[in-house]
Image (spheres, rainbow, N blue to C red):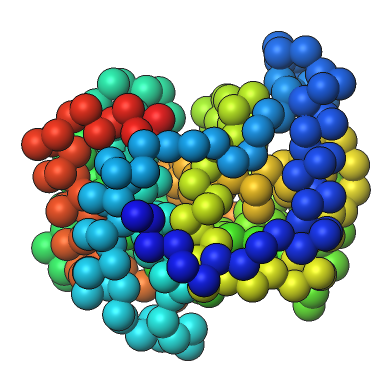
Length: 298
């Protein structure tokens, strides 16, 4: 149903990461104690969670048939099938959160600010304007355009590979600075907004993030699965790879609050593709027509 043919079985190393996440769950009680450099997370539970496959398939099929699924990204080529499908499902989840007035989604969907040193939508304003994508009104259009940019960022940073490890050419090997996942985000980005720690806490307690969808067309290397440092930063790296939806939501908030964290954004080389906007608009229309589908992407 989900178009997941070709998904690779977990490697022993990947299985070990999941076991470690589950062990963390068993050791920790739900609850959060946050200080500037200390975080006790809620338990990290089951990484894979069953979803309503029939409902999800409607979203996945829109993504599979879209023009952006066939687009050749500059310097990166075609995206893995699971990346386009996975980002479509994550957008559906976040769009439902916006309709429910979830605080992180509301922040993502805010009208562009005047602070282009922090807000990627302000920094990219000229590119969006050239494509007729207005971001001066808070709401669904701005959220959708943010996800257009987010998809371009994911292709620049990881070529759409959910398990991407840190950049080996860089010296960022501490738990604070080691990058991980689709958007090559590190734990120190959390300073951008209180919403970032909230997302980390929430997904640590319930990390279901459509991993089974993002796996399609991706083979992880042993080096991708290495974790650097310890504590909350190390857990952040593991969660970013084990829960692609977490990685996406975290980066989406980050783009609005700490855009200098990402080199491709600073250089304005993350692509903004109207084909991506068209696909996400189809997802948005589907969720509006069938609001019960929100239950499948929670």
